[in-house]
Length: 171
Image (cartoon, rainbow, N blue to C red):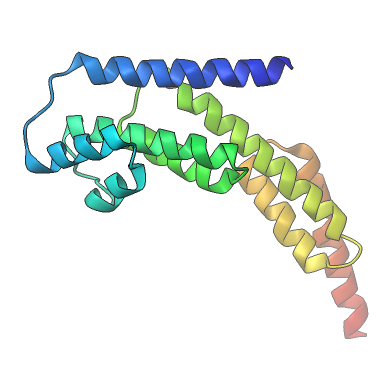
């Protein structure tokens, strides 16, 4: 389908830009960077993140490698259907090394849309059997996509229904 093709193109563009960024700057020779580079060559992205922790103060070369690790783990999680983890890794990658016109922005927006739609479906399914669960799910839907008008309306309806039920129970 067209959207699958577009996603594949975005992923390939993201991977190509990452590879090009790696080739541009000569690496800094410190032991942490060298360890990261060795782990990157082995594809051991989780070990890279474990080595550096949050890496808020990573040097630019290390940040570039860690961005790639997060991007690879995001792709892996997305392919496995774990969209929450994929989004977390994409956002971490973008924070580590912000790029203008970042291809991860479009991917993260798409994931937020999928997550919002998923939580919306769950919320609408629960509305007749578990009102508080439905409200929780709809709140998550709106959290992932504040522009999801259907989720906002359904959340307002569920909250109104809950208030009305509470009033009835107090009588």
